[in-house]
Length: 520
Image (cartoon, rainbow, N blue to C red; front, side):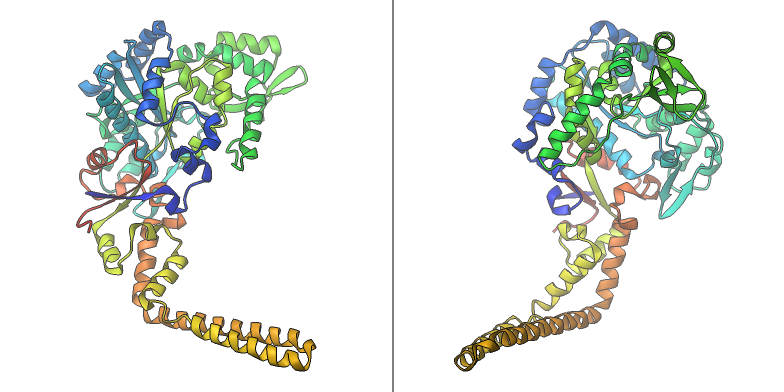
């Protein structure tokens, strides 16, 4: 495959906050830590503090989580390397979507792996481990229970509740048998696993076997134990709520949109098939939507005895991540980059190092049959990102080279009315408003004629217009970028992930267009 690039601001898909971040705008410097550059990493390495005594326990837990797998030696080496003070992680996180979900899940992990490799080249005295953080405690089943393979929606039906990582995989093996491509990897993962977390670790291990990727499930009482003091502060003092509110107001004052709205308590109660918000009502703490209630002392005792029953929400989860990993960077999508910028003051309050934010690679994959159409249409790469109707209009305009435009005629008519106005003004100045109205009406009529000519030209190019629609429908299904809808099982490149690992640059924050064939 070959690679072309489109600046993010030319795609129309990204917020001003994200484009300002990658362009190093001074407007948002107060909302993040080090810059996403090699020099930024040099500073982060020097400043990153992590409790070396916890490294041994971190490795012990991770090796336990891998006990039913046969990871590649590179992964085993990375696990052992985490015991050493000069080893750091770079991390991405994602939900446990069935069959990986949309393509950008793959792109996030590839970016993470490639960033670890790049940092090793830049800083050979250190070691860098790519990590995939499973959102195993998430409970939004409707977001993970489906994917789209070759345009068809595949749905996993289940009535299980609570943290999805604890779900049984029942039904997924059978569903795998109905899918094309490398579905056997998923079928074996679901067949040989008792929980969804275990299955996801298994198929991610198989998909990225020789890359050294480490998968972590933070749903563990030993990890939670290290986070108890911050959870206690959130329960009692609502510190994060106040800080995020203030940071969000600061963002809004600079005309950026806040991605998240914090809650006073940013923790869920997690038990059995339950994950529900904790809310304070007077002197009691209730588990939302249930009859479970605690006094303050009871809740603190529950936290001390069973920290695994407390689950951070999207506000505290990043702080939790950086508490238990020697992490340098978080690799995320546009919305993730945006909400992390609401959290910097929370990290500062709890004296937890804030990671470098790395936008994941954004990819548009163009199969050969679509590339032929794009070449035939003569489209530039950036034009493909235009909304379909605008692209059709611009395409036709380019073909007729402006011949439908009646600018000269409009100018001549306008001058003629100006002359008439001079003559009429010598007779009766009250005629001016009537003449101006007539002038405007005639010019508008010419514009209508222009549009009719353009529509006629569009009809002449109906074949090309249909081709443009088919290209857009394939690359932007349901009006969304391909990477947010399509699943990897719909990609028929035999070594697609290998090509991604070779072609994607983790520090190139442009849209990557991947295609096979000539790039001239």
